[in-house]
Image (cartoon, rainbow, N blue to C red; front, side, top):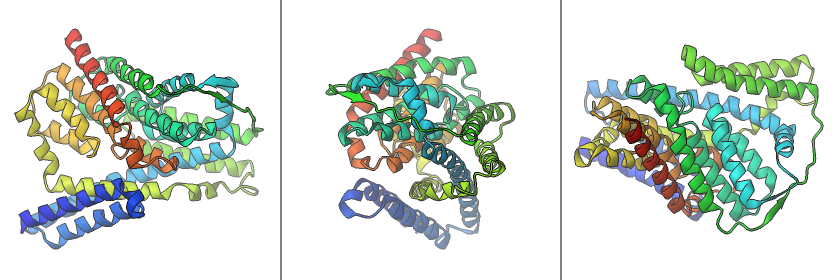
Length: 416
């Protein structure tokens, strides 16, 4: 029965992937498909456990998955509420207008967008960076085909920006805490990560010949809006500091920042005309439900041992190739449990090879739009961005990822 159950569960995961890929064909929202199949998979595991011990393990696994999902949900709620408020009040557009000229070529705009996303995601977390970057793209009012290029670059640049910091990506922190790489060695990874972003920017810039005229309509900013903007920036900085110094989950710091935002609005009596709690209602709950379904499916795959079996790649090929493939696999499987499986396997690798794995699992998820939190958030914000349309950029994304990975390997070889 166990083998049959595992086959059925794998089939459900595959159906979920097909539901996302063919969303435009079947006209069923991807969040509905993944949520249904994700919950059904766990129901089947509870109904047909291997034994009493197996049932206890499933209960523990579900509790662990729900805990991870809840932490992500709460973080997203806080971050999205901040961005929704600042965007509605015009602060994000005003900031863009301050730094961009009134007329700029599309190629130069693409370059500046890539650099902004790379740098900002190094300072903030990738979800916040994606939310802000999506607001930036939408404010430019580009035609759909060009918007998709910018969106693909944003996803790749955001994931690349945080790969060299222990606060920028969870997998980077995991590998650092395992003692396989040091802070200085991680910081060096920003060079090949930036190289990959530059390579993708050059490839996506082909065919962009026009100019963008930016109509600078500055929105009057009130004192309360500026204070909330300061609260937002302070929350980002404190999230990084508190996580690095005290290991405080980013979710907790962002929730504290959001609650302070509510109090500031109440203090200035802004709630009377524009209730700030209402901004929670404009959050993309479809994104949250999609995350829920995806993470339930990933948790199921972890429980039936699929993720651990992927580590057998290191027995079939040298670490330099296995690490590269792990990055590719992370485009379809959550990189956190994938990295955990590699760490728990006790694989013996050099510092150079661990640096390669750090880059691979941090950036490889960019190859598919469902492979990273940045991609899922971007897909929820950019209406024209679907799984199928993002796949059209798979070749330049794969080339950029390969260039960045090769740069990480060469850098590690030169350093050690």
